[in-house]
Length: 159
Image 1 (cartoon, rainbow, N blue to C red):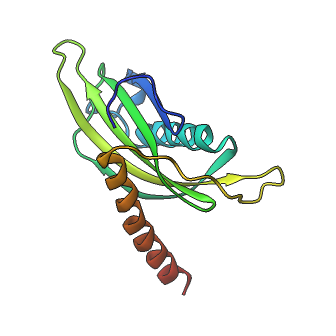
Image 2 (cartoon, rainbow, N blue to C red):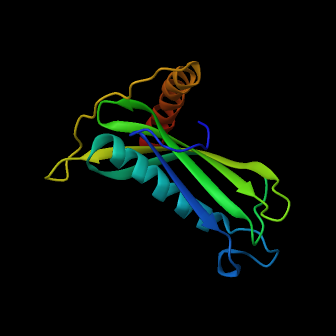
């Protein structure tokens, strides 16, 4: 997923400036604030694709690769990687940018599962995302592996 616009109907993007209220005592973006932004942009991608209200079902992976500093710009790019009947895996890539130097970093990657709801608040079937690139096909294939791991973990928890 590049960070060029325009976005496709199964994608969403968001840009935030890291302000003092968003940071900890070290001047780094709070993990909880970043998680909130990730959840929002993923929900928008899910809703754009399904044209339904979508709810977060799980967060499989949330990898903090580099700290994001006060004053940096955070760009979040979300894409529906794969649809599994009523659920969708959304991948979110987080890029931080130092406005003074222009340096950018891949700061975070997250994978979330959302479920589309019908008018009665029940899960409903969603159409598959059309793919045309090798990168999209790789994300589609990788999503199945993550789903299998997620369902196995869930099964263990429910025992």
